[in-house]
Picture 1 (cartoon, rainbow, N blue to C red):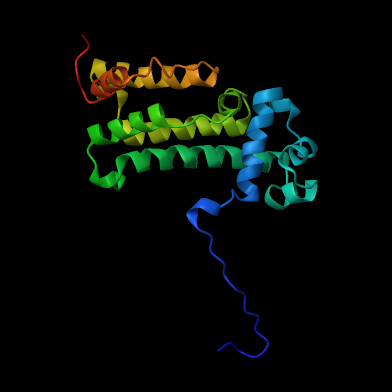
Picture 2: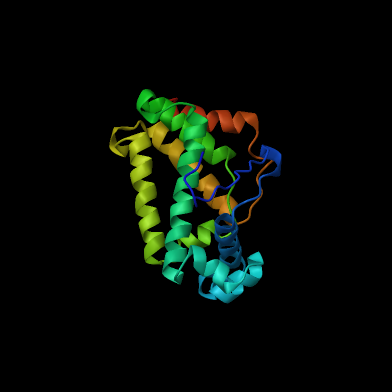
Length: 196
């Protein structure tokens, strides 16, 4: 029983197949689309509102300023990358060995999706992008450890996934090149395998 005057609200749940992205998610995705298509300087609230089908007020509700929007994009990208790596790992980071973390990270990059505008945002030189690059380096260090303690094969494996990601960012489709043998070879490298 509720106290007198208290409002109650019904909580509705949706099945997993009917969940729509939140407006915040739509805004971030729309911002990345604009960045990919027209560059970061073309991103403003009016263009973004038109892109995602919201009013300017609907954008401002989630991001008061353009700087807030940029910080939100950076935060969302980092969170997505971390969640993808954790999903590939399948258990808490603290319970995994360094090699298991490196394999999961590699798998998440090789199997992950690249959002339009993601690369353009990273190289934009904006303070938020610079901060995201630093946060990625910290995340990478947490999962792989000191690069100087990796074997040459492991370092080459990490370079391979960075190169793969960059190729995708430039719009090159290498679905045929990423066969099971190539994917397995890259994973064997980060696992400490030998260069042959």
